[in-house]
Length: 343
Image (cartoon, rainbow, N blue to C red):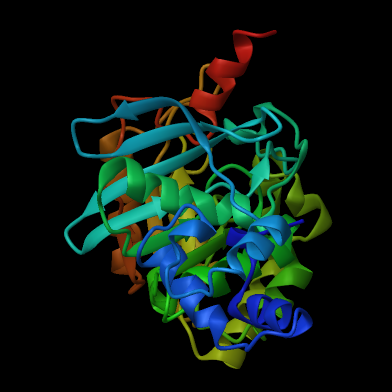
């Protein structure tokens, strides 16, 4: 049985053609699902009455179970959801002056093994299906009554390790008859799976790309991010250069500042040398400490010095404001805590 929230417009059209119906019904279905929030085919009054039981037989509606919700004083809300197979995932709603963004999870656990990350505390069990990623957006909107205007694919898991499902998700939420979330209002982040960056350069939607870099040399990145042993910084930079040349789009460089690891002035200058001449935007991020990991947040004065050094070198850089610091802010923390109850 197909999951209706995991079907693109093309998938739904093909389904209708296969049962001898007109393909235009796909637009009707999408509008009912994403504009009118229908939860069953019985609600879809402009679909033929005798067709609705067939749809209900062939196409499955799904939902996520809310396990826990944490609300920060700054408006950030973290949701812990349970999937149909009882696995747990996290989704985060963030408030900005330009609207509301949701950070979605793409895998149950993560195999990338980044040393500072709470997501990798539990190894990957499986990829999320497309419908399970789409449902995160729908469920957050349902629970808050807010319209999501931006999406970041930066939750638990490595998006490019679940490439096909993530790309289908982007197509579904961008559909003009559905949620209609703008291409440039969505960002996919990768820790550096180089072959997929080349493939992503050919993706037809103009969705933003972010690279989780977090180090300015191979020695430090080998320690922090095991993916660097497979794809060295030099290979990653070449892939970024290719993507920029092919798409004419700017790339965001994510750089978490960790005390006495990657927050020195020398590291800032090395980073400036590494990124020289590339159309990139550097997002400096305060580290959310994780109990199970030894790393500490870079002090504010170090963060400011690092930022100033990059600005002095003429780079486009921002020091991200903290969000959700009074709740389990690090991605994967809430899930990890809940899972410990059953260990």
